[in-house]
Image 1 (tube, rainbow, N blue to C red):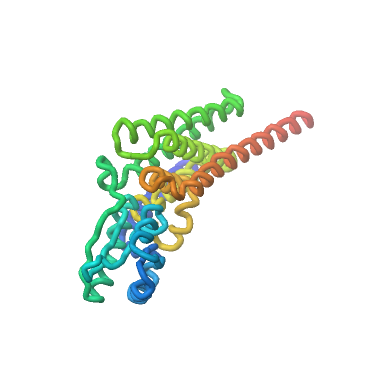
Image 2: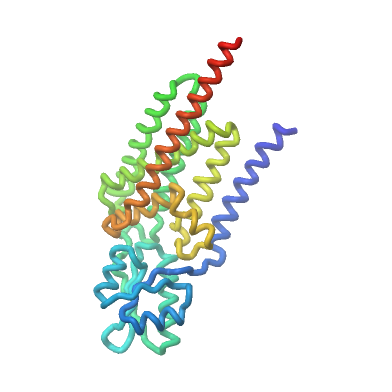
Length: 317
């Protein structure tokens, strides 16, 4: 009975989590603390009072400072006078359509209440062949899946390949995977305008992070480890990454884990490299490197523990 129930229950948990998270997070998204640069103290105060905690107002000295905040991804939009008695909102579509629509709607709400005309300008548009801003998500999902698959395969190669050879296989595959994915999405299809080498390196780190995390969970938890990795990386990690539903629209628990898991970190890094000059890429890259390196170290530790225990048993026998 257990042989029948365990895989069925695991499968039902995975599908429930996948559908529940992807559909649930898009069911009724609400903006929370949307970073908005606003020109001038008076306008900043009025916007904050009108919109409340839906926005996190950053006061800008002038319109140019507000635009710089958007271009460096310190704010998702900049609001200020348009010079003709109305308001101008500078947005960055590269932050994703859900985030852009949310901040545009918030600015329109304030403008309507203030009785002012609002004009909107996109100062960081998406690439021509990424009209919906989802290319980064699909690339990250594919690379995460590839890392998951290679790790799952190496879990069954313990009797064929030594641990150091399995590690070399994963690192080599990760480098090849990142390079191939970056070449397809970048120069070949023209969907990601990021510099090729940094993009390939980021995706290679993502593949390694996904692979060593999966191998870590499979090594320490046994057969249940792979389904846990599925939930962590492919379900929770991708659904909370902020690609399909902007981070500022996620509920608090999802926002908390979004940038800490490999898919979310990778999507932030890819967007930064593609559209914002790598302004905030360091943090996501450190996150990916930590998942990969710590995963490898813990797998090695577990392998050493198993080998030591086996020698002790052989000695006692």
